[in-house]
Image (cartoon, rainbow, N blue to C red; front, top):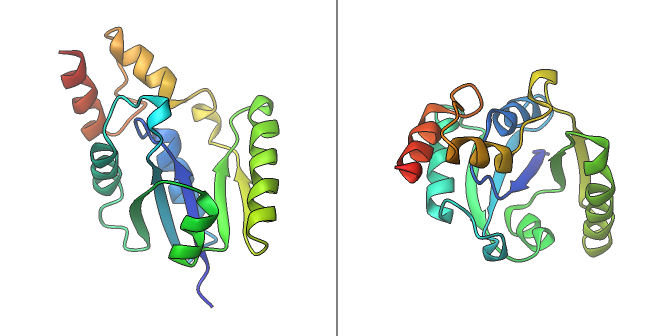
Length: 159
């Protein structure tokens, strides 16, 4: 049986923290679908197609990772791609309550869908996409926080 997991998020933009969770997820799944959520209410900095392109370049060469956009319920996306596991990152205790509620709701809507929580590498614990957007928007150096393709795109947005 192939173990298929989904790592969902808006990835606006993808960070080194996201890269860390993708790489570590591959230690316990056969295939990882990075589900790029189309959540217009969040008013993303980058379009859905840009975020998909960033992630595709970031994971190029890793044939066990697929990048797929989705909208709607995560449980429906999971059924569509045949996944029975969701991977989520927890940076701080404050993340836990929301993620716990979402995991329980997802399991209620899809009985066979389990959620696994991963903590980031210690040096990435503080990192979030919103923090990267803010620092980059104010002209700060984000080179050690994001992949070079994302860094270039953030520079163009600022210009």
